[in-house]
Length: 54
Image 1 (cartoon, rainbow, N blue to C red):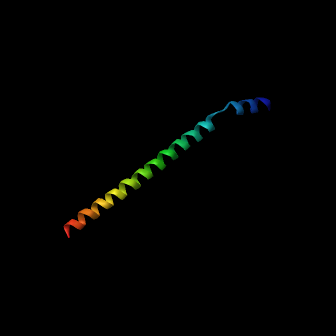
Image 2: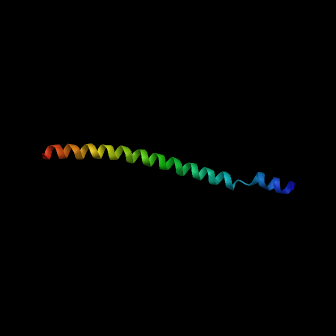
Image 3: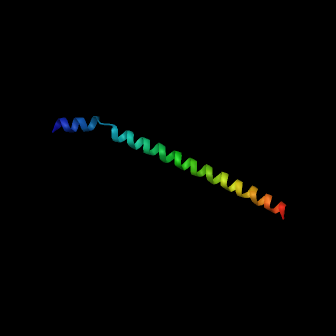
């Protein structure tokens, strides 16, 4: 039983998976925020062009 706990304490695969998950979540948040800004600016530019065409 003590070998099981010693092996469990040394196992870091779960921590690595959590780290990769956090990195992926951070990248997703940054990508969504960037797309939001680009979409807002693009919408404003299209509205400006549409106003000049009318």
